[in-house]
Length: 407
Image (cartoon, rainbow, N blue to C red):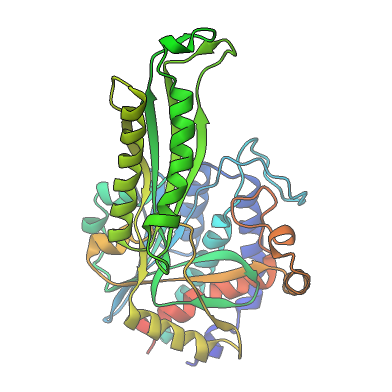
């Protein structure tokens, strides 16, 4: 059976996939609260005759065994974001303050479609296919929750793990890249301790607002003056809070920072610089108590294996029409996907597929308006066009699977 035969009935199942996608989009759930989403995934897999297992709370895994052969794993994330949707879609979120603003509903629908194709075409492949639906990617807790719940001992050991993400790129295209694909991320909560006083008596204070303001400015020099040109790093101060009254100098200020890097050495240097600058400013101002640093929402580097990426790229090049496969590039977003293959000690490939309307994207590019006209992931206006995004994501998962399991 050839690849074209495997996809012969893809058009027949698109109605089912679209209904699944819209249902998930209407009813988004936040990380580790995806109870209805998890139940729907369980039911769809059971309707395909598969046994399912709950791992990591709301995570779902189905193992499809089909004779002797390799074992591979494919992952889709299932959680939504605390964003209020503003797309105006007729299938927009009905859950106040929650939205699938990152396309995880599309990931679920595409992987589910791939599972259905593989189940219905078992004569085209041999081995074991593990479909993993992971919760809580957005808060970096989902992959670790599944691992802590014994994932490695509850499923067969894969030789490779595969994943994909819909992005604000032209729909109908897939994008692969060997090496760093997504950055590491570290969020830092910094508490600066000063000495409070009456607003009219600043000489009796150690003003944490002034210290924090100086810190924010000094932090801007890390990337511009301490990171070597050509190396990548981002240091963003997303929040600075202090005090509640105009005539009261508070006793503390709090900052929340986000750091993005592709290289561990660069990451360590940047974090060391952040702590050095904060401590130095506190000492210079005469603060008696040391600042506090709390690191959270930490994401690992997504670093695609060169050999696996080459195989997947060749499979896409052969299985898609001409020019569907495009060269990818590292994105500055972050994921916890790589924790899964790292737990098994196996290589992986993580690719992008486009979700933006091709005509709208081309028009925005011609007019230099990509940032204005093509909403990015996490925007309240973000949504992938259903077609051909759904078909592309489904075909990509199947082609990647057949590269390892195909007869």
